[in-house]
Image (cartoon, rainbow, N blue to C red; front, side):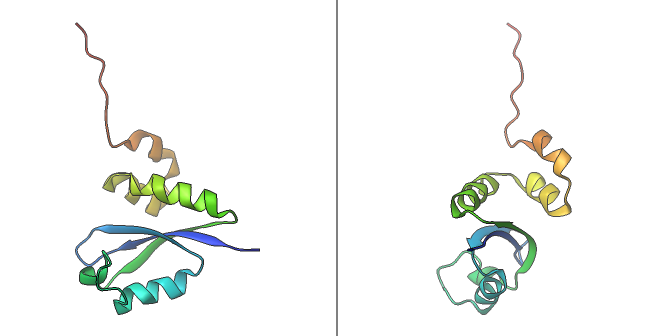
Length: 100
């Protein structure tokens, strides 16, 4: 049975990188070693693993990775802290009712 992981790294500059892999430890080492000069994390090392979630279906992992990549900083940090109840209220865009 395959396992897939969505993981989040905190980069040296304080930004977050979200990715997907089937081996978190190996992938973090690759980021740390700067194996790909064109990678987002290459010039933002060292990085720290701050979150990972395991999936048995690759399609579920890909969907979650895409979802988290679209989140703002506060929502990502709530996920890292395990504050799942706060996630719905931390939408990036806030729509207000306009009275006319």
